[in-house]
Image (spheres, rainbow, N blue to C red):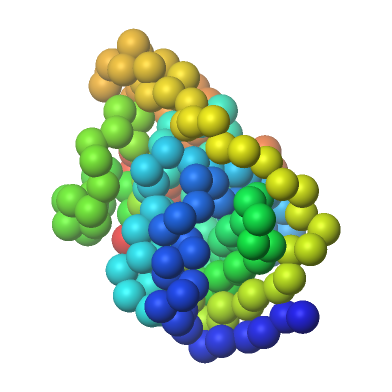
Length: 186
């Protein structure tokens, strides 16, 4: 029921590009494990062994803290329509912030979203598919624009202040590297 691949096949890339949502999973060496749903236009398949994910400002910043400490990351895509499938990408990620030298080149692959705070650059070392027979079916209605409107309303300075107030430390008190506060891998 499950299959493993060393890299993405064309049918995997097509499946990823058709999904409206994906999930991220990370963990530091100790502490809490983080799993988050992601949407909007925030993922790019660069090639069979690499994906980029643009992370927008949110209530927490666990993924950045985890990747700075432990680069392991899993992305999961699920089919919610008639053809069941679960696709997982396992690999090592690096985090690139707007103040990092690689930001300009990597961010050019995405629309300019207000509140963009990091790009995660994932080097894939394993692709796994599984049946998805127990995943429920849902109909996609549309992407939410609430976060984008919230970020637009805050403006650039308001977002930076929000980062300082809410995104500098993880739930476990680890630095996230936001605005130069920590060590960078990008």
